[in-house]
Each structure stands twice: as C-alpha cells, then as structure tokens.
Image (cartoon, rainbow, N blue to C red; front, side):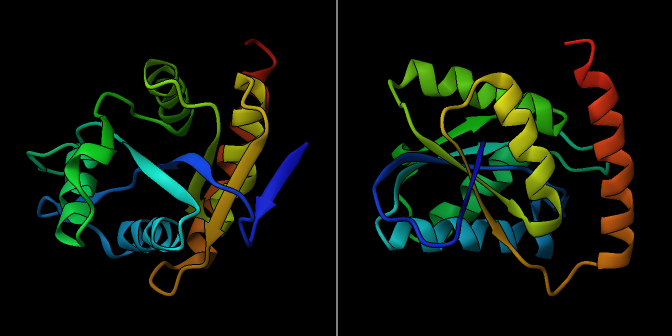
Length: 168
C-alpha cells in the first residue's frame, strides 16, 4: 500500500531526496526542483533530516550527486549535520537500499521519498519491495523537464523494474 503525501500531518524522521544529474557540480534545474520540494517539507516541520542520494555521474562532475545536493541545501540555510549523504548509489533502487542502511544507523523509523511526479510510482514500488513501512512518497511537478521524454523513459524504466523485481 502506498501513501502519497500531499500534506504531511505528522513528523517524519527523514526525507530521502532521490538524486539526479549535476551541471558543473551544481544541481541541475530538475534536481533543484526536488531539493526545493524537500526544503518545503523541512521548513514546514514535516521532516527533521535529509538523506541525499547519488554517486558520481559520468558527465564530468567531480562531486557526487549527493555532495552537490548537500551543498545546495546548506546554501539554503540547512545545517550540514542534518544532511546525510549516500554517495555510492547509481540507481533509484540503490538510492533506497543505501538510504535504508543510513536510516538504521541513525535510528530513523519513518521516511518520505522525495522525487518528481513521473518517478514517484516506481520509487514507491521499490520502497515497498524493500520493506519500507509505511511507503511514503512526496512528489513535485516539473516546469523544466521535457515531460514527453521523461514520461516515456519512465515507462521503459518501470517495465525493466517489474522484470527485475521478479528475481529479487
């Protein structure tokens, strides 16, 4: 069972912000949309900490996605000690596996996964497969992405995930 978050009514331990590409070691406009959405959750008091996810991209960046995300959040006034990085993951599934490990290390029980609307269903399905309980996803729309491309790509990615899931 998935819980789509539009308005959070109780405190959640951590927001898991799923990574996306950096441009010149800074979050791309789309990644900033996810980060800004997570900032809204933080500033409203819905989350108290962040897990930022993503390893080194192959686009020439010298920072991992997680490092670029942490830096952005800190530039927005978030204390660095409440931002925990997963700098190893290379996929949504790995983002969630490593975030789960970080949650265990920090005694966090509840999380909300922050991503774009087109990506939320697959992320929620992966979280369910990994045993997140409850599965909570907070999504944002995009004004910067080519949605025809990303929604079409997501159909393929979701289909691939459903096939992979059979063997996990």
